[in-house]
Image (cartoon, rainbow, N blue to C red; front, top):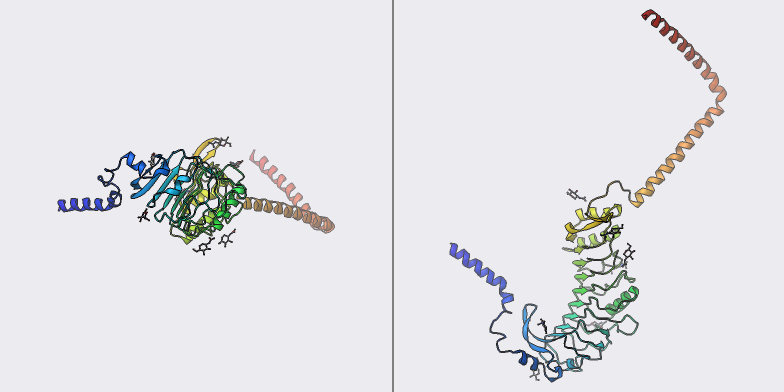
Amino acid sequence: MMLIAVLLSVASLCVAQSPRNTCDDPNFHSLETDESKRLACGPAFENRCFCHMTCYEGRNQHIVNCTDAGFRNTDPLEHLPNNTKVLIFTGNDLGELPWNVFGTLDALPELRVIDMSRNKIREIPGKTYHHVKHVEQLFLDHNELSLDDGKNHPRVFSNFVSLLELHLTDAFEDGAPVQLAKTLHEIFVNSNLTLLMKLHLEQNEISVFHDPNVFCDLPSLMHLYLSSNSLSTLHFNLTCLPKLQFLDLEKNNFTHVLERDLHTLDHLAKEKRSMTVDFSTNPFECGCKLNPFVRWMNKTKVIVRNKNYLRCNKSSSLQKFYEEKHCYSNLGASGYRGTTVALWLLSVLLVGLILALIYVQRVELRKKLEPVIDSVSKRVRYTSIATGETREMGV
Ligand SMILES: *[C@@H]1O[C@H](CO)[C@@H](O)[C@H](O)[C@H]1NC(C)=O
Ligand SMILES: *[C@@H]1O[C@H](CO)[C@@H](O)[C@H](O)[C@H]1NC(C)=O
Ligand SMILES: *[C@@H]1O[C@H](CO)[C@@H](O)[C@H](O)[C@H]1NC(C)=O
Ligand SMILES: *[C@@H]1O[C@H](CO)[C@@H](O)[C@H](O)[C@H]1NC(C)=O
Ligand SMILES: *[C@@H]1O[C@H](CO)[C@@H](O)[C@H](O)[C@H]1NC(C)=O
Ligand SMILES: *[C@@H]1O[C@H](CO)[C@@H](O)[C@H](O)[C@H]1NC(C)=O
Ligand SMILES: *[C@@H]1O[C@H](CO)[C@@H](O)[C@H](O)[C@H]1NC(C)=O
């Protein structure tokens, strides 16, 4: 029995690891040397790159790797080996990209991944990327894409009809946030990114999207990465993203979260199986304004990632989240103040009316009250005589 159990667990381990093992075939790389990998790229690559089959994202694929190769233009890319599946062309100094980076022939039927990060790219004309209809991942991180009108064509991604992941971390030059939102919207509207599932926009100094519908042309979007920006509210439309599952808002500028935004997030969780949001490392300020968020976290269906690590700033020290007591919400406070004022006015009015009544009826009142006052004063006198007597008797 023990033996069978052990065999079974070993078998299940093997099954669990099999996808990774396809990459780890030890005989696989034995015939290739650095020299042969360089030569495999062809003369256009000037021995600066490695072209070979390698394990990339869990699968063996033909890769062209030009990392920090020091090219000053994209000319070699017109001569990519026709079986290239992954292109890594990073750390070069490119400036403006030409038309038809991959040549005019549809010669790269296998190409799935393009990484052109860290290339100091400033301009991408609309006709740069052709013959990329099977590409699923595009990386343009850490470039200096211009936000000037006309420099980067809105149809820049229009041929990436199969794109699943778009990485634009720190991709844009520093500039007016208004311009960035406008540029992004024009790009998304004019592209056919209908399958896009992941969008990375970290480190772009975004504080506001003046166009709330900036992401609405990405109907398949599941993961939206906006960490390390300067957002303080969710003023962009999320209800138009029916598949959204994860919203990354780490390291932004939230001091509290508006109730309106909490409703928006709740709405997303209601319609979907699961919705996760990450608010880590925001400059939250302890106090009444944080209460709606603190209470919301306790009851919402939205998964708040790292919620036990959230901290707020209370007189310059960081504290665990807590509910601040003795607060009136803005609406409540003004309502309360209004009631107090009304009560005061009514009291003054009442006292005034009573005084007026007394004045008007003063003659009648005196007539009616005189006998009463008389009898009371008599009784007081009698009582004092009586007590005087008892006192005398007691002595
Ligand atoms: C590409 O080459 C660089 C060094 O030249 C290496 O560090 C990197 O791991 C390679 N990338 C892949 C995916 O093989
Ligand atoms: C690549 O080109 C060669 C000829 O240069 C051809 O024989 C081969 O079929 C092509 N492969 C693909 C995947 O198109
Ligand atoms: C998107 O692709 C469809 C067909 O796949 C095409 O009809 C449409 O014109 C394209 N839209 C844009 C903006 O390129
Ligand atoms: C958000 O998008 C939805 C669906 O497209 C639309 O009905 C709604 O009016 C939009 N909201 C705003 C504020 O634009
Ligand atoms: C962050 O928010 C504060 C106010 O809460 C504001 O003064 C500051 O300018 C904002 N920072 C950025 C980078 O937008
Ligand atoms: C959250 O709920 C738990 C129990 O349900 C309670 O002990 C805790 O005080 C609540 N915290 C807040 C901030 O409402
Ligand atoms: C906390 O807030 C004070 C101002 O109220 C500010 O001076 C301080 O830098 C903040 N501390 C942290 C850790 O954010």
